[in-house]
Length: 283
Length: 326
Image (tube, rainbow over all chains, first blue to last red; front, side, top):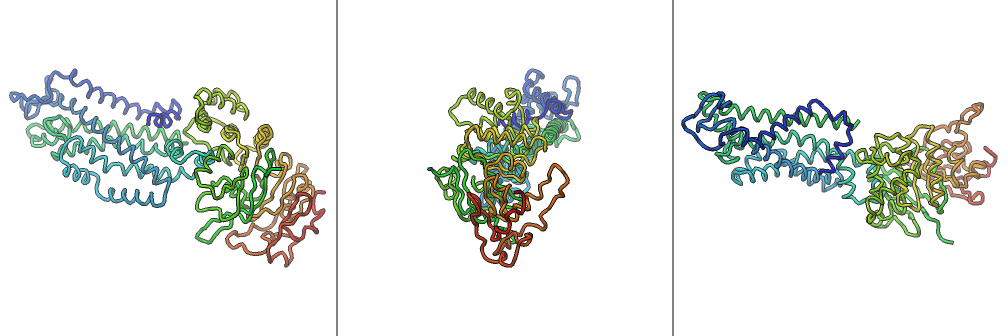
């Protein structure tokens, strides 16, 4: 995967890599990661310890995001939550990306019954709305981070398969593939070493925006009580818990909402920047 | 006396389509000796590329070989399992493709594309040295620096040179060059072809050059097969073919080459090639042929010997003597 990323990225001339959206997104991601990693240093409060003396206090200098119904500092919880949501977002997309790309490449390259089996499976999974299916699987398996990974892994790979299959269908008829075959390379070597580096960029771009889809899915699961268990400061869970207090303490749900939004903008900028960059290279 | 490096015998390629079966190659036979430069000449759709690809078993499905044999170094490739053909590709027979823009992988460096073909067991440094040596052989200036380049950073001519370097990497016994310069600037076409032929002679390989550039054939090639409608219609040593062509199609081809003096008007071949789905009996060139008569339109036209190592698929070869050249 590392060499693949190198092939894909290094081929672009340096000046194109300084894409404004990509740079902004990159800086925002850096900030987000820093917030997640440095949370214990950045804030003097504990994310889970309750202090009922200071329940539902409006944002102030001492508590910039206010406090929630258990007297916990909302800023602290948002910062600690970044670690949870980023971790889930980053880890949950790895399997779908790798598995989906490989399966899609196989379907596209071999065609025939392999393609039929893979794509009909993809159709079946796509026929059910993403979130509904994930919720159904998590509801069946029970809440928790591992089960979120399993549910997302089982559903999310189909998009990558679709993207990569389409690219492979186009790429496999190009001369360089025939040239690679003329050199006696074996099929898996042609698929992995020659076609995939050309076919994977769209999936790679989708990966960036997919992270936010997964984070929002995790948040939705948290909201439904199917995600990470309380009192963990997961953003979706915080929004869910803060919902009851919208009239008395709007900040409890709104602040983690803003955090979700921030993460969303970050990954959209990154994905968009990558797309532009790879389009430039492709021309 | 051993058999030539490559012997193609009665090769047939068919492509099933919705309109019917396209008979792309209809019983092609020829042989190529090591060190020999052999050309397949003909217009688009005459089956030269199909023949070339069939030799390496690289036909795009649904095109497939339906008959005949391709004996390379005494072994018939047609019935071999794919894994054994893979062993021959690149090592025994290499191929240089038409369009170096698309035949090189756009996201891999020159170095990676060359070294990947080199047999395993060599160290990275050895492979690198060999890659530099190959690039130097094909006339790439400053090869050490060029190793890190991506195809889009090279000119068309350089790309074709890199393709050639990749093809030569394992010193094959036979090199197939499928219109290797069609995609290039006219000014460098001759350069590249001369390079290919020079390297072929140096390395003692057999070369099959697919082309429609008769000027190049005349200057560089030992023996020529002229293809029309999926058949070889004339096969001869280059000098004989140009001095005394014995098939009306060859005569038409030679007459349609522009000369430098510009005084002689171009003589095109009228009409279009036949539909290879509905192809029937008789000479496929008859509808366009000035010499054609009723007897040309029925029955199988035999491939007759008309001179020393000179064959023509025409029943009126006697009438053609002195029709052109001389």
